[in-house]
Length: 87
Picture 1 (cartoon, rainbow, N blue to C red):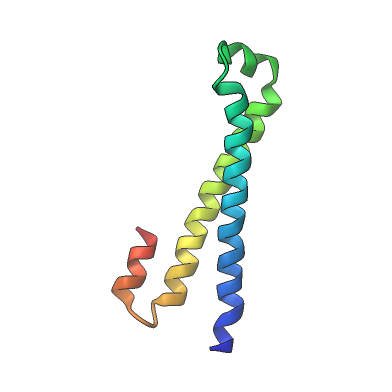
Picture 2 (picture 1 turned 180 degrees about the vertical axis):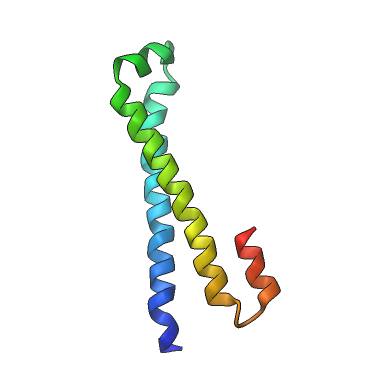
């Protein structure tokens, strides 16, 4: 059981990072998109849009990585059930 602690903690930390990056992306993007004239806001502050885009891409990549990490951890228990973590 102790041999699994490190991979489980890494998977948990990656999942936590997905949540944090998702929150940042939604907060940054939400400020500009929900306002009237959102197109002008994106043109006026392109850095805000770029930060939102980069965090969305990083969040998606980490989400795939978390799925793979969970599959690798649970495949020894039940391969079919572990496959559902990837879907």
